Length: 243
Image 1 (cartoon, rainbow, N blue to C red):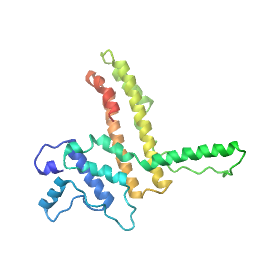
Image 2 (cartoon, rainbow, N blue to C red):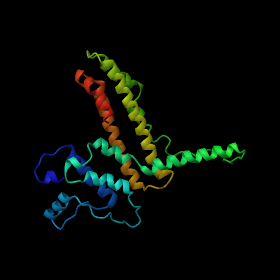
Image 3 (cartoon, rainbow, N blue to C red):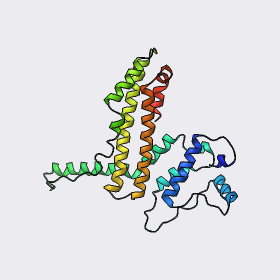
Image 4 (cartoon, rainbow, N blue to C red):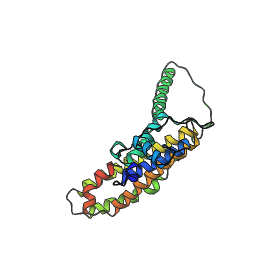
């Protein structure tokens, strides 16, 4: 990151920059800022102006939304990047095309109901198609299940804080919601390649890696909650909703 080369303070924003450099190289097959020498490269990094996305023969183009997400993580000033790695990973998991596809499916369903009201019938196969992405998010249940919930609630119950019980319930609710969202995102990423074919295998791999990293962060936080002291109980709800 530019601040690292200039000997300035480094931190999570620096790690975010390095992550986006690796991600850019994986997507485009080249570094985001290339120069004739180290000084020229650093000047381009400080300027923060990315070259036009290269076209790679035989490789599907990178979606514009994904390019913009990565580009933000490569901005020269740390305060212009993503607020956290968690938000960056979440942005990488949100595919606008999938959202529009969901709307289209709803519209198609409404249209189908209209045809049914008119007494028309649609033929369908006796064999239901197999969804290759049906169980793609099942590993969340290994990290977040009834046993883990009880461990968290038990830790909160040991606290003397008057709000500990309420904090425990709200924390569980936030973690449940995160797990459901993670499953939906992982399924959508899988379907973009395995079902609709609109996403390359390489992009599937990159986005799945991002979701795997997010799950690791989630698991680490659950481990902390399962051994929570009074300080953790006090900050747990904010931390859980901040995932």
